Length: 192
Image 1 (tube, rainbow, N blue to C red):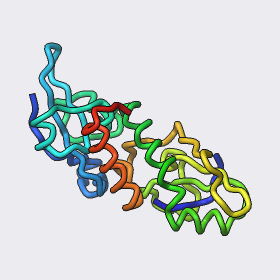
Image 2 (tube, one colour):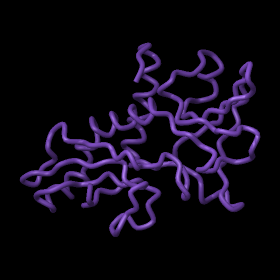
Image 3 (cartoon, one colour):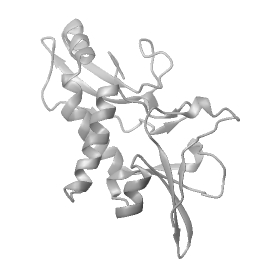
Image 4 (cartoon, rainbow, N blue to C red):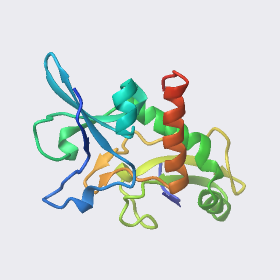
């Protein structure tokens, strides 16, 4: 994650996205897992961050489903064969809204900038300090007097959970908090 100024039946197979035969270009630091479920209408494949042992014992909650592989028979995970899960996206944006303002890099960028907005740039962005395509901007915070304005986070509806360079990538602290809050949300029996 980089802070930057910008305009507004189950088989626990590991997710190994491919693009033009290159597996490495699609990897994320997040523990992605493909969960295949046999439904009356045929198999469904979900991408989740939930550990396999948890899925085996309790199933999967809506906020734990990153998205669905549209054609589960097609090998690999490609952006054109993936549909993001709105419930997960809302959960992810809630984590960012609550915790990103405490990140030192974001605070430093807000102080440097003084006024305007700071964007939360997806870690997969090739040039986070230069022009960043809209699909690699998770959202933005308003900045006033060198500080992040409370409750000002606005998610970017154009952000892609899975893009040409792979799944989204977060700042390590946000990644840890996302995984912790997902686990806690299921433990508490709450939804997104």
